[in-house]
Length: 528
Ligand SMILES: [Fe+2]
Ligand SMILES: [Fe+2]
Image (cartoon, rainbow, N blue to C red; front, side, top):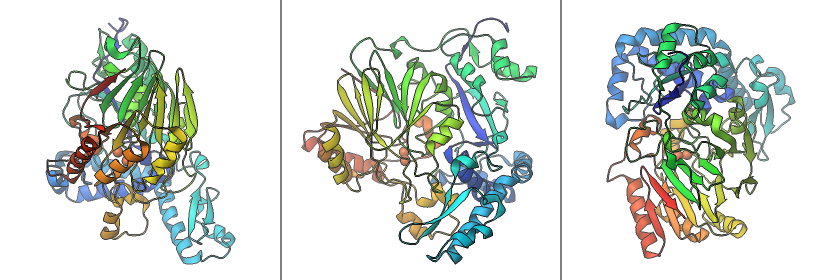
């Protein structure tokens, strides 16, 4: 049995964890992870321990969906208590690093008045020493610039925090990833592996090439029989994958849900913001079974947790040639480097700026600007893309907003008109503090936070983008509406939701102006 050839089950999923919290960029990149641990995750767990029933009740309340509440039954509160104790002792260096950042910001606020910053280096907390530069902008606003590559080699980056959980997708919505830690559960295989571990590639490679349970056990460094038995339950005798995952001629775009598109020609495949449903038994959606065996480029538009999705990237790492990411500003607290992050995950990465070109067999990708949608924070690691494949050009707009549509006129003057445009219209996004609270060491009044939403285009802005680009086909996507991604998005739309009304308004505008437009949901295919 251990030596019979097996494939990985189509529904196998991986959940990457750091200190048992589902990992996303800001809980991995060391500066942001330290702050999230110290100022969000530990306080959240402590709040839970004060009253587990209050948290559990809040999680059951649809009005509070996406809120920061821990969905762990009271009977398991002791495990949460042990988790907090372990974090306090084993992650002390990260907690100290975060506190040091808060102190250094205070130091700047009180002392950086436009005069020379040199004397302040001696007053920096020791944890930051050699890891930050003190700078002003030209308006004398001081800030800390983090020397990010060095910090990955400092005590603030603790790889031992990482582990993975393997299981079969049940189709039942998982707990919200930003707030509920994943405890051990029956039917779930816990492995203490760093995300870069090559055993993960061996496991997901077994979707394409059969292997033996014994070989996988060794690749994943599993020493006990019980864990090995759990692993064996994730394997199957038959290969997953549908023959239509490849094409023989022309071009094809498939919408996999949310911001994930797969563009194919017989020679090449490109995926955008990979985020794939793991439930191959569900109908009306594309899943891992529908992905081509080799993906030349994976394009990441920005660092939000619904666009750079580790559980999908880890599953695909072995079949993606290169991940294309936008360049960050380099050291700004709110703008961690996507390239450093993904290289740490063992991926081959190309970093791009606006109008940089990346060739692939039979086509090319050009990076284009991405405006707004980041609560007015100075976050540069965001890009839209222009993809030329099989004789068509496709504009991938992600959550970029039309706050200044003239931008798209400049894009058009350089790149021409796109045959198809994919636009996000999450036009009533979450407020500043929802995603960035741990990085804000000064209290932000609610009114200020609410004024700075993570919003994409509304109807008028989307119409302006389409007009400026001169495109005749526009598809609204990236709305987080698919039923299977609630654990990441926690969206709750209904018919009276502002966003859906705005989409309808845009569709009416498009009809009146002879533009083909659609609101995408679940699954869609275009062939030419
Ligand atoms: Fe976003
Ligand atoms: Fe998004």
